[in-house]
Structures are given as structure tokens and as C-alpha cells.
Image (cartoon, rainbow, N blue to C red; front, top):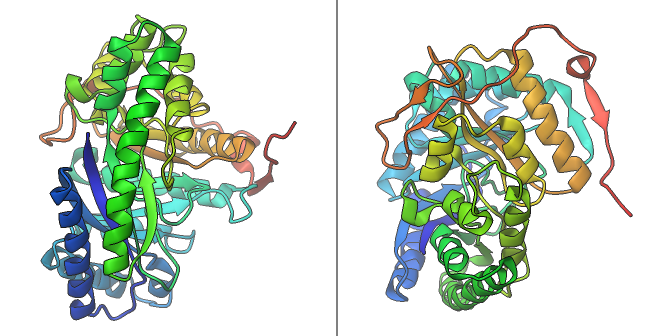
Length: 403
């Protein structure tokens, strides 16, 4: 396993102060070095904030984009590989495509469920769908890698694009790339119970060690230590595939009966493990970031509904899902309503990172010249423009499921 990211969270003020960002960068890299010295490879150091409320006070769209470009330059100079701007409300959604077009390492999100955790905002869903559609024109659909709609995602989640922060105290959390632990546990186990126990033990062992390093380093640098998002994130290699782990447990290709039970088994191992939890702490099923998931998509074995169903018992929602380039606002909005409803009813954090690919249709092959993506195939989505009562909904109050 590796550390996918060491994420530093801090407020950002305007205009951006390069010296402040540089200091934060030195601090984050010092903590990353502590993890490296403990034997863990650190892939990236990242910065997360919540800048949109300040940006909303600017009246000129060009001025907003210029501020983000300046921030990106400061963050890159400070050694932050990626920067998350945080949560954009409906007033700021229209400028997100401009921000994505003008930058290369800046991420943004837009919440589609209110702060009460129960209110689904139809206007935010429609706005997020428009962002997704507009961003599909950036780098042949690659622009949507840096945008997600979110539901009930708490501050301090280190995985991007969902990371954001609004507290005064700077903080730090880590995200793991640990699908290989699950794959090893499932391949060696005689049954699901043994796989779950083996995985849980491995997570506990690494989690306690990472906690000790993180607490000590954060104390030394006056940071609040938030903990570990030990989601079983994959890498586009069969040796680090969460799809491979699920198939090893079920003995069948993804999508066959038993996949949901396998996903629940692995997720439970994470959530019962003894370490300081932050973020999702679940199973991550990013279609294009996992070689087996991408291959099954190319074979036509995956559906958006399958991924959403599995998210009910495990992970982060819909992630890097390749969709037809002509996906309509109606079709994208319907998917986002499903994500929001599932999040509210199960009271769990979910995201939707959807990637319509211009010129592509369902079943077409997908290739990006990007080391973190595997070759896959386009999943199907709806087929009409008719507006239903659901999609005319401005606000819908649901309630978390209770016994």
C-alpha cells in the first residue's frame, strides 16, 4: 500500500499571499517526509481550502478566474500537486468551467444536498449537471476529472475532488492507495469471513502506525491531525485493483450476483478497524482508475445503476464514470438525484464524478494518455429530454432511514 495523498487543509484569504502558501507547502512536505521515513511512499502532497465564499464577493468573472490562476501558481511553487477550492454554491457554479479551463491542477465541487443533510436541492443538481456538460468540452472530457457533485461530504476528507475546509485551524489528513491489501486478503482466503479478518488486521496494523507518525508530525508543526481515509483506492494495474479483489471474493466477473455482498464485506473490514477515521473510509470504485473495472466497462458488464447500488454498502458514489458525449442535462440530473437520495436516506457521504466524452457513445472504447487511467468503455445513460416531475423539483426533503 501507498499514501495517495497527504492533504493539508487551511483557509485561504484574498488576495492570495504567496509567502503564506509557501509556508504551508513546507509544512505539508515536512509531514510527508515523516511518513516516507516511516517506510510509506507518498504519491502527492495536496492543498484544500474553501475559497468560493470569498470569490462570490467578486463581481467580475475574469477577476475570479485570475485569482484562481494566481492561487494555482502559488500552490505549484509551494510543491502542492493539486489544489481543491472547496464547495461552490449555485451562484458560483457557472464560473467553474472557466476555472477548469484556465487551470490544470485545481479541483472544485458543488454540494447537491443542504447542510441539514436532508434537503436535496434541485437547482444545485441542475447547475452541477450544466457544469458537467460544459466541462466535457475541456480536453476531450478530461476536464470533469477535476469536478464532482457532492452529498453530505464532511470537511477534512483528503480525497479529491471532495476535499474542503472552513475552520480557522490548519489541519492534515492522509488518503491511502490500498486496494492491494484487499486483493491479497481475498486471493488467500478460504471464505469471506477469513478475507474480512485478514484485511481488517492489515488495516489495523498500518492504521496504527500511520496514526502514530501523523500525530507526532502534526504536533511538531502545529497542525490538527484529522486521521486517515483508509478507502481501498486502486491504481490502474491488476495488482492494485479493487475490482480484482471483488472478483477474487465472488469467483465471478464484476456485476454477477454476490458483488454487493463482497463490497459490503470489504467495507466492513475498514470501518471496524481501529485507527483514527476521517473522510469516506469505504470502498472506492473509480471506473477509469481501476484496470479491472475499466476492462469490465469495456466489455459492457457495468451499468451506472450497478455502481450506485454497490455504493449503498461501500464507497464514495460514482467516480470517473465515462458517459456518452451527448448526455443531456436531464439524464445527468436524474443520476445526481439518485446519488443525493441515496446519500440522504443512508446518511452517508457520496460524490458523483461523471465524465461525458465528446463524440463517444455507449460501448465505445475509452483511452486517455494519463498514467492514472486504464483503458475502458463508455457506460450507457438515459435516452431522452422529457422533463419529469422529479426534474422539476426545486427542493425535496427526505429523512435518513431509521429503525
